[in-house]
Image (cartoon, rainbow, N blue to C red; front, side, top):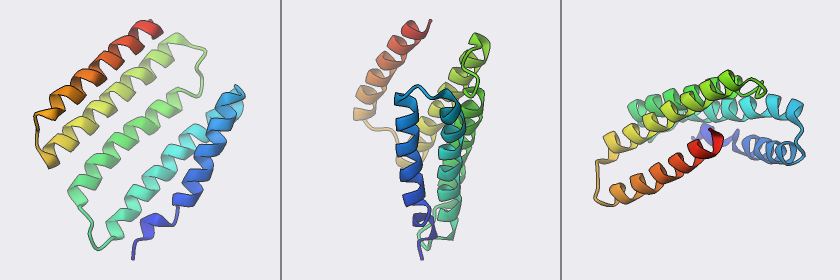
Amino acid sequence: MYYSLYPVPIHLVLIGLYLVARNRNDLKRTAIIQPVVTLVALVIAALSFLSPAAMPEYTIWIMIGMSLCFLADIFNIDMTKAKILYAAIGVFVIAYMEYAITFTRFNGWHRQDWIVSGVFFLIYLILMRLYW
């Protein structure tokens, strides 16, 4: 049975609540909902170990990246301090690099990956310029 699918509706509702809170600039609700959304995603990933088609090693690496994102979400609770915000951005960058390494490790490196890498690197540069 696919137990990992049970929390998905809760996750979708939380994402909707997060988007509403973020659009209303309700930082108190956002500070609570954002880490909870990531935590529920971690629960979904953990429940996938119970699936008959589970890939435990892949799931572990994805959960490492999600745990880093959860840590960065915790940092983002107080976005008024620049040092904490930069630390959160740094942890997110490390998490996304970990995801890229994991995807490449389990799927191999393909020619089109250079294009995707280039596009995301440009997006990263633009965002860092904007944040700086």
